[in-house]
Image (cartoon, rainbow, N blue to C red):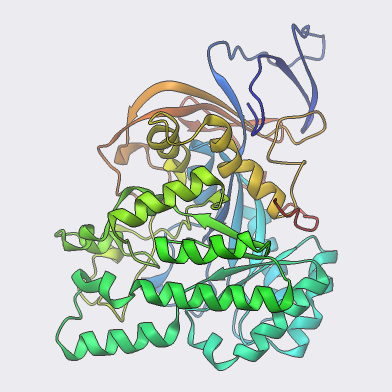
Length: 452
């Protein structure tokens, strides 16, 4: 199964690559194992282009992610995802090249899944922007910007210059679109009113903060002609802004996030509502409906978790409020099964669109295609043997993430991976991870292949 066709065939893997695809391929003396996938579907390995598995040393322990490259890999592979796009936050005064090297060294020791790294750009200077061509030489063709940070307000001109530099060097820029000033002002107002509880979290980050930031990001894109990738878009109004830009042929790409497809802001009123705190917040039912329409129309190009795992204890700490957050959730292991069950089986999307959203489009946008994101000769043998009919309950016992819980526990989901293969090696089978830390690779990438 690819994003364009479904057909019946045998696949021969030699080393790390797909060597041959055809009918009735014979077993040879070099065959180490034959897998009978009759009645199952073979998908390209999933690609989650947006996860968090590391933080710089200066971040206090109570805010640190529960997962690292090893445990995050295990969660991903058990869910049919073979490649991860990891956000790399710099240490203080660290340049993008330094961030890339430090994170590459750490990932090569720990990871089982394959990795691509998105260095975060803080306080851009001439020195950091001059590194862009060197990043490309080292196979890193993406950078991440947080408009939600005070740093963006202080250095807005420099960030605009960064997009000019990205266009010239051939990078795609990931952008977190929320407006710092609006959020800060609203939070201060709510706190003065005595409404600092996380029950008011959705009010503290209103839709307009996402809309204004998205408009500004698109204005920067229009001025520079630099491709941008808007991460975890959450609202109908922000999506409409993106769709207008796409109608004018601007290189604006949109990432959907699973939690925004299933849950609304009402979750914050639950006794353990803090478990659902993510950035941006959960929205309304009309926003869920609009996001599904965007997925169906193709104005939302990818689905990614923004996997930012914390333990239940971290999420429910009594000191937290709308201005002191532990945002993020664990979704890596269930992203594909949930989207298959809630999307494909409920006739919201086709299986082809499922593959495009969870593999092919990310491979193209982040310079991995056709090495990854498809099933064809000479591509990496990243494959998922998928059972469309297997029904399974999401349980705490099956979770590989060190977050050790899932907000979806107890839900029955249909469609799960039986075997996950990463570059020709079986890495997940029969509920177990079968490969070692360090067997994954940091994959060098080419320039983004922009979508129509």
